[in-house]
Image 1: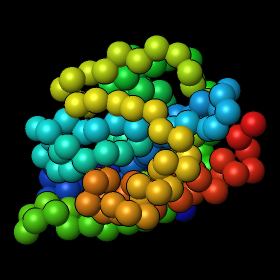
Image 2: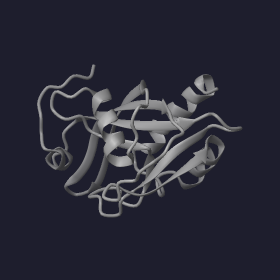
Image 3: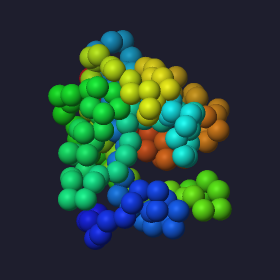
Length: 169
């Protein structure tokens, strides 16, 4: 069960490695012929996964902040998006080692929300964004897997793609 047991500076938690709370937000638009998902290419200068593609937004809750409150905050900070109703659909633990002293060891909450409005990209966080159809994403994941996408993305997106089969329009 996920619960806060203490705090640590983000980079320090990624260097130890230390299991910590995280979230991955997926935004979808099912108003057209095929459901679309919003992806972001992480800023090149990020200390890990720079230049790789990922879900609309991901981060960590601050001390005493709920996962949903943190997700709402980061959507606003990274994409200028407000007013999205988010729902948690899954959670999982994953571990990835980037280099000798840099890891991700996260309890990741997977959140979804419907969105079709304006986007204001924070260039310190994101290189670019794009909307992709579910079928395009499935093809890309099977072909590119972990070479084009951030390490958590294939696992997190599998929950979302399955959820969309049942819940999208």
